[in-house]
Image 1 (cartoon, rainbow, N blue to C red):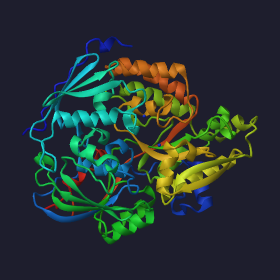
Image 2 (image 1 turned 135 degrees about the vertical axis):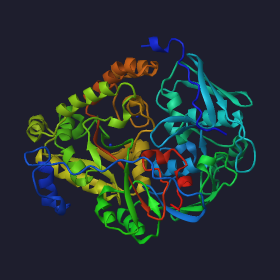
Image 3 (image 1 turned 180 degrees about the vertical axis):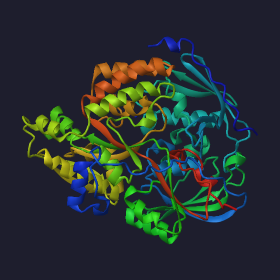
Image 4 (image 1 turned 30 degrees about the vertical axis):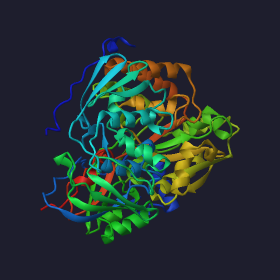
Length: 564
């Protein structure tokens, strides 16, 4: 069975016509004794300064030998998932588990290319109709055939109001089985983002009859899942481990698991993760915090790896209607008071790129990268670290001397360091920052529950995209009513977003995206401070790891095995 055959892709008729985290910083770090060993030399961007050696980025380690591994223990990135229902596929650990249990409709490669998977091909038959051809021969763990009915049911769930990742102003109206192995999706109008999203865990295929019987227990420790992936759901002991068992009947030989069993352990605390990796208690982990790079570099149990990522370190304004940040000048002053290059070099140990807008470099449309790069250079100039300019913006503000509450995730040493540096840099321009470190579940609730943001001024998070499309992140941040829009409402921006979604050609789409981006960025509601690389650590007894951020969207656990 050829799983690499290029899919048939057709542009909808008429689509071309239509027009979603240095000098002063080093001084602060030294003064606060956070990273004293990193100090010395010139400041970032100043005379005598030099960038640290940037790590080589690798997307995939050499393939494992074709022999079984009895058992692997892997650290769950950033803690335990609340659920493994594809409707809740919004976080690192959730996505990793789902991607190894379930098959998405399309497949994302380690280099972020889109390939067939459950669907062997897709075609727009007109501007409002997308037809998917479903692969024959795929079976669920219980032996039942995966059919178009299961695919359509799974898509309908992901398109419904209960899906966090359904997307703002979702244009898809329905998905239905138009044949035993054919699904037809109907749209209000053409959506250029839609096909790209089909490789995400939120579009994982689950068995319809089983899911309907499971009801509210679907995706929980009690209910589990019924999917077709290379691993089966074994057990889930909350706070301890999720156990996966190999699916020996998996349909795709390229992703047949080497490990017979995998134990996934929640290790959100940086110190606990480091100790587990160094001691060999766990065989590997993704999302290694930059704060522990130095400790792991000297470890003898394995090796650090760096890969391309969709990530961004995001500082967001949680309340722009009241409090000190109701003043746009204060928001702009705060953003200009943060030395982003210093953050990348010192806190992230060179494993990140400084960024000066919400969109990370990874979100630029392929085919229009030059247009977005040119815009990024302008934002870098406008939002560059400039304490004098920040002080001038604060000069006439009534916010001077007031306190901002900044929410971070407890146990994340990197977030803690970043937050303390923001706290000290804000103090220089007359703002006080109180850090509210919340436990993982409460921290996650801050972003999806408005009541959890009461009294909060700022949130700090590492977020990620699922596609190389700027409209994904901007849709979540800048469109009213979307999941992560905390108060931005601009009719011109919304119109630009809606127009851009209907344009297939990336260069024709870019002017509308750039208009949306300009309107949103000028409001200073949100900014990415740096774009971190994917950092992972694996035992030298293992190879085959996907070391790009695509590990979240592929059966990455299945590829882990012995080098010989």
